[in-house]
Image 1 (tube, rainbow, N blue to C red):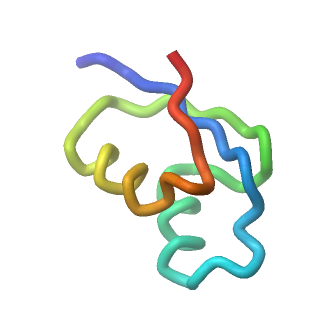
Image 2: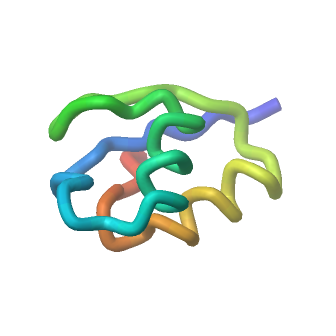
Length: 58
């Protein structure tokens, strides 16, 4: 399957606990950290939940 790169661009400080847990589930711990995940509907939904904290890199 295709993969996508996800980069955390903003801090999780002040975010609700469910958004913090979503970032952890994506494997993001620090600002500017990049992870590569398979492009599945579940991952896309997680990105949508924290879209203001992350960006998708081409």
